[in-house]
Amino acid sequence: MHKGGETVISAAFLFNEPEAAAADLRDPEKGNPGVGGTALCFAYILKYLENSKGLHIKCFSMQDTLLPCSDVVRVKDEEEAFLLALQSGTEIMILRGHQKKEVYDALKDSGLKFIFWMHNRLTYDEICLFRKEPSVKRVIAVGREMYDFYLDDPVIDKMDHIANPYLPPAEAEGFKLSGKKGICFIGALIPDKNFHILAAAWPEIKKQVPDAELHVIGTGRLYDGSAKLGAFGLAEASYEESFMATLKTEDGKVDRDVHFHGIMGTEKYNIFRECAAGVINPMGTETFGLAAVEMEAFGLPVVSRMKLGLPDAVRDKETGILISDPRELADALIRLLKDDAMRESCSASARAFASSAFRPEKSASEWERVISEVDKDQAAVFKKPEANMSNNNKRVRFLFHGIRKIPLFKGIKSVHDIQKK
Image 1: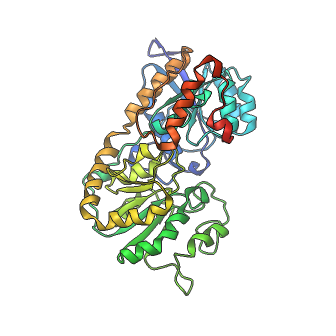
Image 2: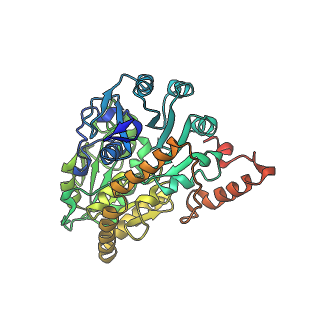
Image 3: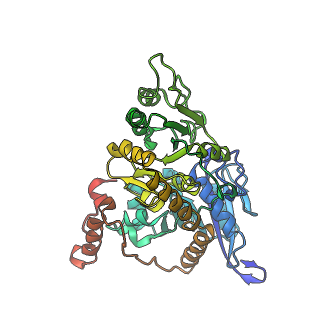
């Protein structure tokens, strides 16, 4: 198509983030208004690609979310988006993974070129589909660590990685912490986010640091607004009961030093002020960890696990602590709360890291490159691993990658084939 007298590539993003249905994401730089990290990342990239000279970006949205894109079309489902894309002359569709079976069935004969944005780990069915399906041209990991997680599998031949975008809001500049010993957890209160591990560690933390307080941002309704909650109104009843066992007093009330704030937008910055450390998903099952970067931007060192994508968001012993085992969580937090010199050093490094490592204009430039390559039917270029070789058994995965390049062993099973995940 033509834009300003020049021929440009037309590409469309498919936005389907139900928890962001009522959100205003037109200015993602102002901070997360209380949506999932995926929705915020879509907003960043839509905004920073809006004025690209070589692209025309459309957005097909399944919600009435306010998005920073001048060409937004409301659709009822993915199939309608595919049809409208073709009718408008758009050949490239970008959408997140973990789609319904009907969507994967529909893409095979859609006539579109697909780029899947991998905000969650690929299911084994997705791995098998993406390896062979001609219409799937790229699979984009949200960081280097998750790209390396697929080194051993043929799907790596279609993969690339682009860091999730983030720009600290204006409030982060000159932000001062109060000096209190608060711990801030951000995440949905669902088993996948593993808040129960922090709850189990809380008694030991409180014993070693008597003036510590726990601030929890999120509920069981972050991703599902209709979820039924337990007696405290925090999470599904059985899960809530599991983590509240160590967070309530003998009379059944919430400990006075534990504060549940619910889903919060930019008002959470006031909570950050009362804290000295942050925690996200201590089991480390994140593909990236945008909430960690957000806390780092305000000077909070973050504790999580050295696993999957977390090393992209947290630098061990620099911007926080990455533990090797969830049972180390209490000790890591106690160390940060007690060791003023370490905490202050990590705080300064965290601010610098968050303000420079994930600039949205850099991510947008990478998206321009990938979209252009897909438009020209260029293959993805393999990237040799460079760091964190112990993470996710990376050495073994890279060894499998090398063996698979030998013609005699081309059909060797990957770790994902063996584990079926």
